[in-house]
Amino acid sequence: MRLARALTKLEASLIVLVIVLAVVAGWGWARPTQPPVTTPTATPKAVKMYYIPILGKWMSEDEIRDEIKKEGTIVVADWTYGGLVETYHVPAFKKYVKKHWGVDIEVKWIGTQEPEVIVSSVLQAIKAGQPPPYDVVAIEAPYFFRAKKADAVEPAIYVGNSLMKNLRWVHPFFLQFQPYGVVFQAIDTAGLLVNKEKAGWVKDYKDLADPRLKGHVILPTPGTVHFANFLVNLALAMGKNYKSPKEMEEVIKFAAEKIHPNVLRYTVSEAEIIEYLERGEAWVVAWWWYLAPVEAVKGYPIERVAQPQGNVFVPGIAWIPKGVKHPVLAQIFIDFLMSSDFWFALDFPKYRESKEDFLMLHQNLLNDSNFKLLPDWIKPIYSKIYPYPLDKMYQWYVFPDYKYIEEHTEEWSELYKKYAGLT
Image (tube, rainbow, N blue to C red; front, side):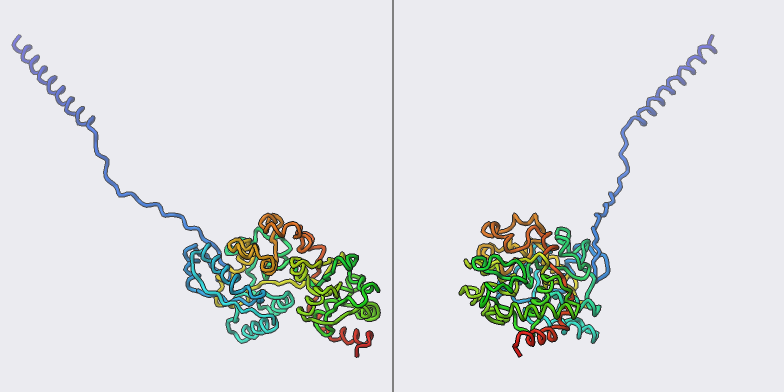
C-alpha cells in the first residue's frame, strides 16, 4: 500500500510539473513579440526623358532647362514686321520661354528685307566650317529651297519632336516640308489687289486685258522677280506652261499687247502702290495679298482675288541651319512660331485691339478650330482676307520652281519690253 501510495505521489508531482511547464510555455508563446526594425528603402521617382534632335540625346526636363540656361541667347533672322519686332516679337518669345521653361533668355532679332544677305551668310559660314550667324532663319521660300539644296538645313522640324509639341495641332499644308522647314504664313502670295467697287468683276490675270481697266492697272517693274511672278500668274490663268519657252513667249506677247495699254504705272514701291490705291486711281494691282487687309481695315474697298487657276505662293518658311550655336532654343523658337500664343497675341491685348498691328503680326490661323481665338472685329471679314477654311490653300496656292523663275526673270523682262515698245 505504501509503495502504491508513493508511486501515486510521484505521479502527482510529475503531473503538477507538467502542468506548470505547460502554462509557462503557453504564456511564452502567446506573448506578443516586437518585429525586427528595418530601414525603409525609398522607391526612386521615375524621370521622364525626351529625345532632343540636333543634340542627338535623351534628356530630362531639368537637363533641358539647364541647357536653355547654358545657351542663354538666340539669334533669329527674319523680317522687320513694320517695327513690331522690339515691342512684340522679341518680348513674346521671351515670355513664352519663361512661361514654359522658367528661364530668362536674350533674343537677338536680325530684321532685314534682304534675304539674299541672310542665306549667303549661312552658306558661307557652313562652307568654312564655322557656326552659322543665325540659329533660326525665317524668310521667303526660295531661300529655304536654296539652303536645303546646299545641304545646310537641320532635319529637326517634324511632328514628334519633343521641343515642338505645337506642330501636332498645325494644318498639314504648313508641314509639307518637314523635317526641314515649316511654312508659317498663309497669305504672303503674289496676287491681285482689286478695288471691288471699281473692278469687282476681275477674277483672274487674263481680265487685266479688259479695256475698262485702261489707265487703272499697276504692274511690278520689269526686271524684278515681282514682275516675273506676275508673268507666271498670267501663264497659270492662260493655262500655259511657264517652263516652255514657246508658251511663255505667247504669255509675254499677250501681256505686252493686251495688258500694257491699261497700265497706269510700273513700280515696286509699296508707298506708291498704297497712294494710288487710296486715291482710287489704281483699280487692280499685281502685288502681294498681305496689303489687302491693311487697306481694308482703313476703310478702302480693296480685296484680294484668288484666281481659280492658282497663284504663285511665296510664303515665309522657317528652318534651322546646320551647326547652330543654340540648338535647343532654336527648336523652341519653332514651337513658339507655330503657337496660338504668338499668332493671336493672347498675352498682348493691345495688339489684338489695334487693327493695323494685328494684321501685321497675324499671318497664320494654324488650324480651323482657332477661328474662335480671333478678335471679334475681324471674324466677319476674315474669310475675305485670309484662306479660311485652311483647305482653300490647296486650291489657291502654287509652289513654283523659284530658281527657274529667278534664272529667267531678265530674259522674260527684256522680251516683254521689246513687245511693249519700252526699249
